[in-house]
Amino acid sequence: MMFYVAPAPGKMGYLAAVERFLKLMAVVWAGSQVTKLIRAGGALALAPFVDRGLSWFTTKYKFESKGKAFMAIVGFCFVLAVVLFLVITLLWA
Image 1 (tube, rainbow, N blue to C red):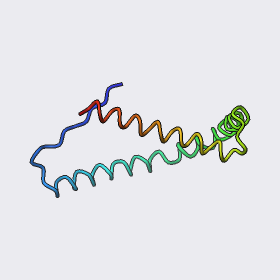
Image 2 (image 1 turned 30 degrees about the vertical axis):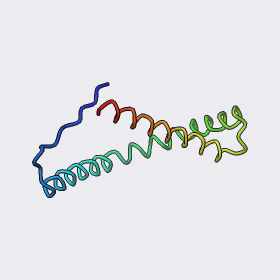
Image 3 (image 1 turned 30 degrees about the horizontal axis):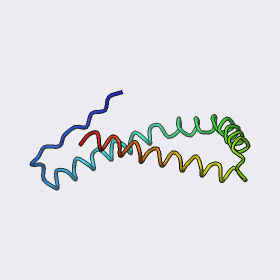
Image 4 (image 1 turned 45 degrees about the horizontal axis):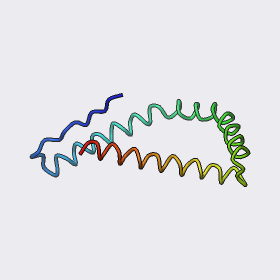
């Protein structure tokens, strides 16, 4: 998979940059509203499987509760996101 970051014009003023940002956020918001029902349906359909997987993870790694196992998974995902961000940023520089 290849990522492309569109360069902003060097002499773009503050107001033009804010306008471009607001247009982008409007498109992101509209896209999230269009897909809201599909995402909610998918979450409801996958909930039993995710619960079963969380129960397996809790017993396999001997966590005291599902909450602690969930926080371990969230922490791992957060650390992974930070590492990926730093690697991509350092490779881009």
